[in-house]
Amino acid sequence: MSTPLDAKLPPPIVMLAACAAIGWVAYAYPETRIAFAFSTPIGIALIALGFALDLRPAIQFLRARTTLNPLRPAASAALVTDGIYRFTRNPMYLGQTLVSLGVWCVWSSVYGLIALPLQVAFLTLFQILPEERALSAKFGAEYDAYRSRVRRWL
Image 1 (tube, rainbow, N blue to C red):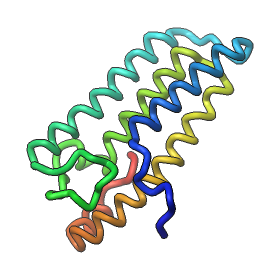
Image 2: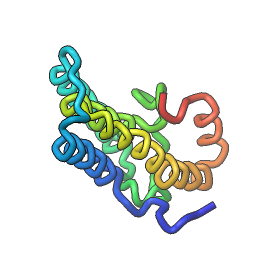
Image 3: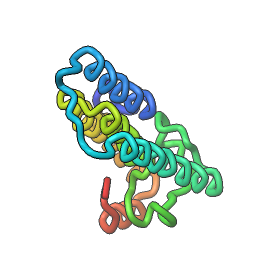
Image 4: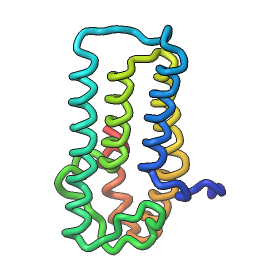
């Protein structure tokens, strides 16, 4: 079922909104921050891992000569199923979620944590599901077989 928000908001903007919300809540409500050992280094490591998970799939897309534009999944010229795509169908969105988790670790606001499931839900409902419909329509049985053997997130 299609909605007006389907593939309309670039996923990096969703990530930036989640990160901004996490930072704003921590700043506006400092009493909600919790301290835990090594939260900043853990957060920085998660941010770096998240950006790496964004970069590698982008390189795979460029090598396959297919679109990187998440707003036009039907424009895909090739179905990328190797490399990191053997383990997750959405490594870029997973990477962006890890960036947000890393930002949360740095700020450590209990209330800011709500941004993470909201980000995942928004990406799943308004980006991933429409992409899956478009890729299934474009690549048919090949995509359906891939989808049956590789998980959406992890």
